[in-house]
Length: 324
Image (tube, rainbow, N blue to C red; front, side, top):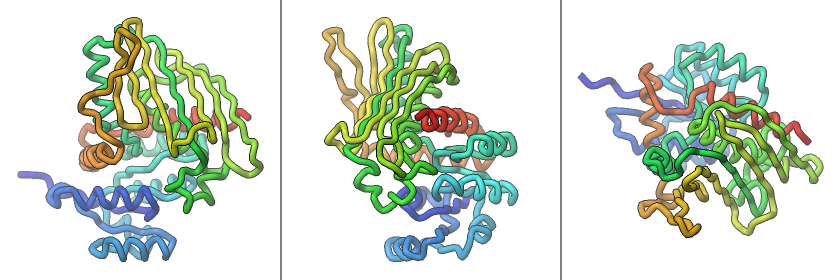
């Protein structure tokens, strides 16, 4: 007999909440169903009603949690742990947006409380491009790994499609590109290379009251040295990023979220012939993330980012941000 469908409730109707909601609605009803959505913003809820009238609007978080088997949390970061604790207290699983939190000690305590009943939405856990990188590593394309570099750059911050959330995304308390973007590449590094150690970092805040505009850091992941740079106003692209793994026989990299490339003997880079654009790759990754959510909720092994992995990323991120 097949398992009954999982009912997923969503807290937060912003960009990420709506994106996950649409992905959940595309899942087979026999596997996953939407229990409803809640957001304190009447404007956000009205937008969801207009766009997706089939979705149940829950009156508050208590009602949403009660109707759900798993709660997806896509509210601003400082509210994540409050919602997560409420869901866990009601016996529900938790799938949280990153960062897990912004208070490191509170997050540390939460990881101990939650055990294996939660996961964090780092889509690189389900990325087709990352799967290709792993295939190349396993095939010996790079030989013995030697170094990881992470470079991120933005024309402006927040990115053009996030300006409606600038009230928190461009403030030091919850926002900034290190939390919002760099965390993804730190997760990828940790997942492939191992736990972090030995961080040295510097963050710059040239605009009073605004989030960071430049970071530099070095650390290790497992046995690998890692270098990290990030900056605003240094590219014409909305969002540009390159994650590179160098080995003693070659190198591979992930460019702009979804393009896996490997370095040829002549020094040029060759893209995976099956590489997808970010718009093509995103729905595939979200579908696999939601498959992982169903497994998480049933207490089965899954591939999602664990709370411990997410906490390790958060601890590095918050230390970088305090290094001004």
